[in-house]
Length: 135
Image (cartoon, rainbow, N blue to C red):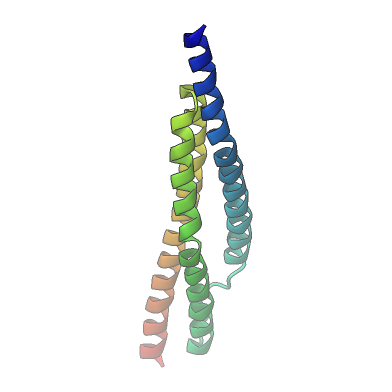
């Protein structure tokens, strides 16, 4: 009876720890995904490099603002990773795998945004150099 009581107490303790972590994890995941959806939409409508240097500079400024927004959201990714790791330790193996899958998908998506913007910024810098030397 003591053994069963101890197991029940341990399970209750784990569930009490897991519930706020799961809620926090879910909220962070939703917040990140809403932000990434908006960012991807905004980035998708950025103009392609123009001929005039002034237009390229404006695009660089927009891209730099997006890069700054990505940098500012890094703490959310870190929080998701930390919460996901703690939650995964409290879950069974199957659920821990699902948590890790969500973490990986969000990290991949965030990194794709970050790298895509970096590449766009580099392309704009090259375009500006070509246009300035052309004129």
